[in-house]
Amino acid sequence: MLKFLRWVRTTFWATVLVFIATLFVGLSVVEYNKFPSKVELQDINNISREYPPLYQRAIKKSRQSAVKVQSTSLRFLGGISTSSGTYFTANQKHYILTVDHGIYGPCMLLVVEHDESYYNCKEYVVRDSTNDYAIIELEGPVEALEPVKIPQDLPSNYEWKKSYSILNHIIYTGYPNTIGPLTLKGDVVGYAEAEYLYIFSHAYGGASGSGVFTLDGKYIGYVTAIDVGASEYGVDVLENIVLVAPAFKIDWSVVLN
Image (cartoon, rainbow, N blue to C red):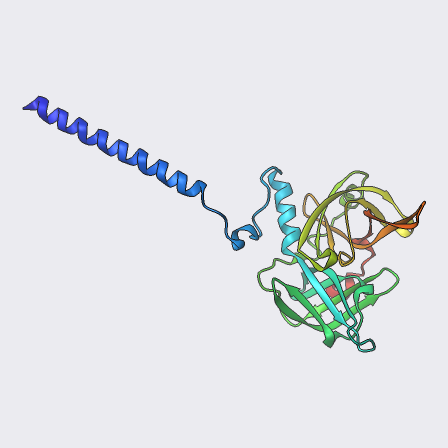
C-alpha cells in the first residue's frame, strides 16, 4: 500500500512538472511569434540596449523634448516653413527654442506639433537673427513630453569646454525633410567662424532648430545649417557636415529673470 501511494505521489508530481514545462514552452513559442504593435515600436523607451544606460538616457532626453515647428506666412500664399525645436521650461513657463530663419509669419500663425497634437504660440519672447534663434512661449505644456530644464540642463563651468571638445559624441532629434522624429548621433569635428561648431552627422531641410545634447544629457546647442562646398559639378551640399550654434549664444536671461 505504501509503495502504491509513493508511486501515485511520484506520478502526480511528474505530471505537474511536465504540464508546467509544456505550458512554458507553449507560451515561449507564442511570445516569440508575437509581432510588436505600432505603439510598442514608437514608444519613447524603445531604444537600442547596445548602448550603455547613460547613453540611453541622453537619447531618451533628446527624443522627449523634440518638436516640429510650423510657421505660415501672411505675405506669400501657401508659404509654410517647417523646422525643428526643443521644448523647455524656465520659471514654470513653457517654451520652444528653434531657429529664427524658420519663422515666416506672426505668432498666431505658428503651431508646435508633436504626435499629431498641436500647441499654440502665445508670444515670441525673442527673435535673434544674428545668432539665428527664437524663443517662443506656448499657451500651455506639451503633453507626453519631458521638457529640458533651464538652467539645470545646461553645461556649467568646465563642462562647457568638455562638451565642445573634438570628437565628443552628441545626439540630436529633429524633423529633417518634415519626417520624424528622427534621432541621429555624431561627433564634434571642428569649429567655424563666430564660435560655431562643426558636427559630423547628417541633416536635411527641416532639421534646423534641433536641440543638440551630449551623452550626459546636457543641452549644448541647436542645428542651424549644413555646409556647402565646391565640386566638379559646381556647388554641392554636404549633408554630413552640420553647423551647430552653441547654447551660450542664447540670451537665457529673457526667460530666467
